[in-house]
Structure formats: C-alpha cells, structure tokens
Amino acid sequence: MFLINAGYFLIQCASEDDKEAVYKLCGQHRREDANGVPQVCFIGVINPLNPTVETPEQVRDALLAAAKHIPPNRLGATDDCGFSPFSRELKPEHGCSPDFARDIAMRKIVARIEGAKLASLELGI
Image (cartoon, rainbow, N blue to C red; front, side, top):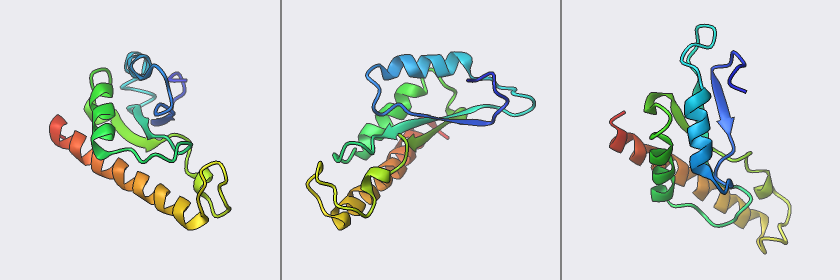
C-alpha cells in the first residue's frame, strides 16, 4: 500500500494480535518521498468494537512502541475504523443505551488525545 503516492495512511492496529509486526512493516515500507510528500502512519490505538475504554497510558505505550519503527514526526494516532458501533441505536451486545454508547465513544476519543499528548512529551515532539 505504501507504493501509493499518498501522504498518510490510517492503519487498523488496536485490534491486531501482533501490533509490533504491523509497526515494523509500516516503518520498513513507508516512504519519506512519495512523489514529494512524506508518508505519515496514523496507527489505530482505540478499538471501537470493544466497549472497554482505553487509558491514556495504553495509548501512549502503543505510540511509543510504534515509534521504535516509525519516525515520531511521521507517526499519528487514530481509531480502528471509526465509531459506528457507538451510534444512536440500542446496543444489545454491549448492554447499553444510545446515551451510554456515545459517552463511551467520547471517553475513548479523550483517551486517544491525552495518550497522544503523553507520547509526544516522551518523544520530545
């Protein structure tokens, strides 16, 4: 996929069993010059299919692990595939109401933002 002349890639990774392998592949294959544009890897650090809210520290740790393979200035945080599981309808598999589902989604977003800030501080960027 990194042969595409695109500036950034959103990579589902929070739900991956072998995250380290994904980080390594991204680091090996991303290009600093994709037709004049550096490629940035946005790593999935939030799993929207799981109602458990990640902590900022878990997000930070995932980004620090990814930064061992991907240059920190070419690394970003994202969610695995968005928050459609937390939309307005009742979620029987999570046993929660639409309001509770939205609350979970917002808490996951806050954890991603706070965790990315923690990683940035440790990486000096």
